[in-house]
Image 1 (cartoon, rainbow, N blue to C red):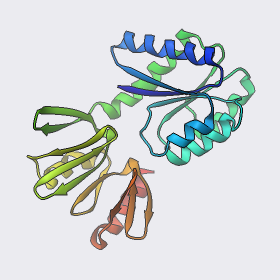
Image 2 (cartoon, helix red, strand yellow):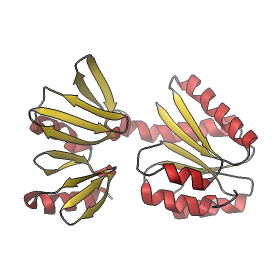
Image 3 (cartoon, rainbow, N blue to C red):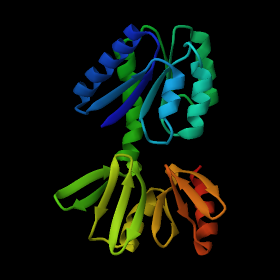
Image 4 (spheres, one colour):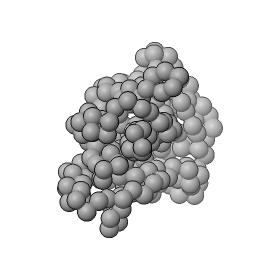
Length: 234
């Protein structure tokens, strides 16, 4: 599923963009969820960790905080989400480079323009999302995108996968085996019990790593290697 968020204070504009996204999802055969916010302040109150959306469509001129300042705050939380500005004034679009915006739309947004930009963005995204992790659960097997895994925890012969969509406890593979599978995708162990997706590590504080909403211990033996790998991931 593609998770999209629209920040737009004009209901008609938000409805138009929502309709375009649902139409696009039907054409490519993929579910697209759409959540709308009328102000940037309300959006930022809820967007508190990376991975909550794949695409954010941000109006620039809004009541309260404008889209440019909101985008700067968003990038501190999630440096990887695809950010697209939506504006009625073309000159504002140049500010997108400062916050690594993928692109911008001029209002009113036309479906063909959205389709072209989404196709281009997803072409690169699928390279990362092509890999799936198979989670053997008691009621079957669940496939999870590699990028949606925040970290894997080893606990008494079980592997607990902390993901953007929930927490799953599995038996079968060892931490050593899953580390070998996931390290090529940007994962690194911070101690014997935790395998971290470096894209979701937002801070290191002494001997602790902040991953999503959780704080994980970094062992003395792993600290240097973990921090070097984290620096390279940036």
